[in-house]
Length: 93
Image (cartoon, rainbow, N blue to C red):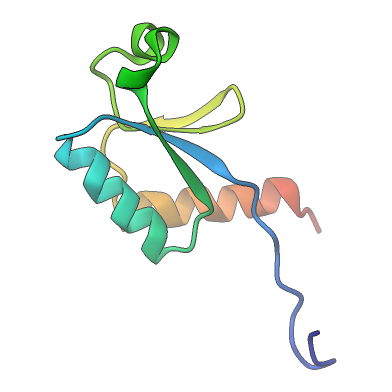
């Protein structure tokens, strides 16, 4: 329960982080996402032939449903900008 003087907590949907073992960019992305409190489910693309065909060697990929939010390097600055844009999109006003 929040106190009256506390702002309400904004809930974020869970996103998928498509990765593969041994991918240093994937490990870096997962760490940065965790530090910025993104809700993420990590998915190994090598375990699913359809995902492997869709993403190939282009991991990490951050997605929300079928919507790709980004690929490649996910720096804290890039993720902060993305998080702010998603908050504005899902919680306008």
